[in-house]
Image (cartoon, one colour):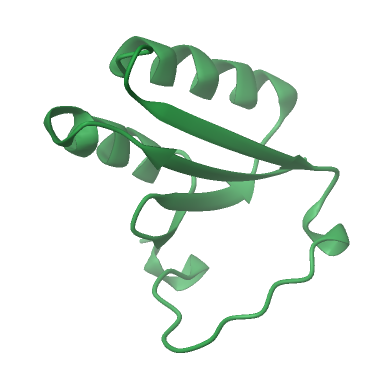
Amino acid sequence: MYLIIVYDVGVERLDAVRQYLKTQLTWIQNSVFEGPATPSQLAAIKKTLSELIDKTNDSIIFYILRNKKVMKKKTLGVTKGTISNIL
């Protein structure tokens, strides 16, 4: 499967969420990550994020696609995150 995760979290939790997601997916823009994942990886990501956020104030949205081929993506302006960012 292919994930796109967007989030809006309090500033005091922002770094924790961003740093965790950087270990799992590719950073695309502020508060946006994407990448391939297995069902068990998705479950682990959801579990960890639910422990990091304040569920009464924060929001995380998961867009779950069968694979990247079913997604049509266009970018206007600068492309901020790419696979090449992985060491």
